[in-house]
Length: 77
Image 1 (cartoon, one colour):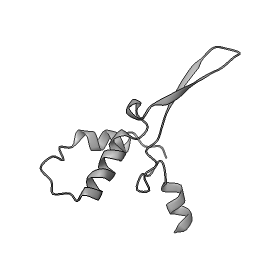
Image 2 (tube, helix red, strand yellow):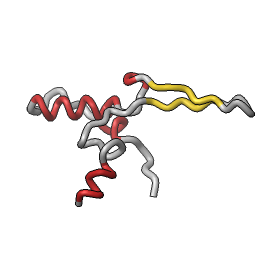
Image 3 (cartoon, rainbow, N blue to C red):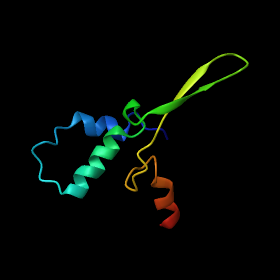
Image 4 (cartoon, rainbow, N blue to C red):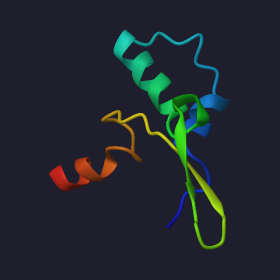
């Protein structure tokens, strides 16, 4: 089953400015909101045969991120 939207897209659509988050919670939400976006940079993979390009953006590597560390959490559980 594939998701229709990314966690970062959901976080960016919600106004979180009026909430009372702890510093740790704000840091986590900020990391998740930019995960695998151009904000964190990335790299381009080019096929030498056909010349097609594929852009891969860097991840946040936050332990709460389902795309970055979710598999480790599942292994632990």
